[in-house]
Length: 318
Image (cartoon, rainbow, N blue to C red; front, side, top):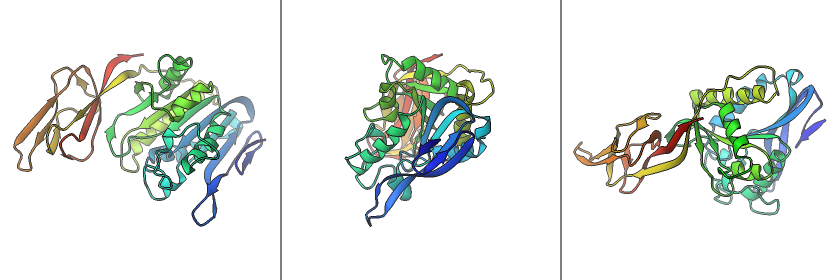
């Protein structure tokens, strides 16, 4: 019998329930939606979570499509799922946890006696610690960005190669291989010996079917490659960047991009222009080095110094 919160499943069974993590402001207990898919055959454990940033919903779309397709009688091992991590942010469609104004994915491994976000992080980290592999599903929030998988443990980490393999198996096509900020699950879980990646499933406001499809395919790639399900995965070369160049607006106005997501960039290439409200050119911004046009703001209006786009640099294929 495998249990997660109130969900409990014997081998060959599946169950859903709630993982209690605290009380709301009226004293009512609340819990995160969880699922246990307990395979009929013995095997490893995969932990899958989504919506640690409350407005990043593509991961939830992946969970909604993956879980109903999992037949525990055909599964070897166990899949543990937390469908919505940032409970409070999700309720009000905000990125951060509004209870403590905290970005959830900066609080791992958490503190069971700490702030609201730290307590949720501690509860979900305990679940992650039971796994052999972890997928922490994200997206680019309101930016436009490539579908990518992020390896956040850093190139010198003992699990770097295992995390990089997991990213390749997931198979978005693009990988950011760069040590992440403290408090990210994809930083903390490898320290416990668990290969973990942070798929960033595109950038959209709310819900994007193409990015959700990338995520669903990625999860099933992982399930097949690591022996949870029968099937072979043909690994495809991934475009990897180990750095980011960020570009801001040198003047206020309206941005017109000269590059699109995934375009190759060479030094001196024009990335974008800024015009005034009457279309007069005010500034032209060029690339500093070779790379891939990776991420861009969604709305065209900018103030001086405001973020405009990013280029993935130090690019190779692996």
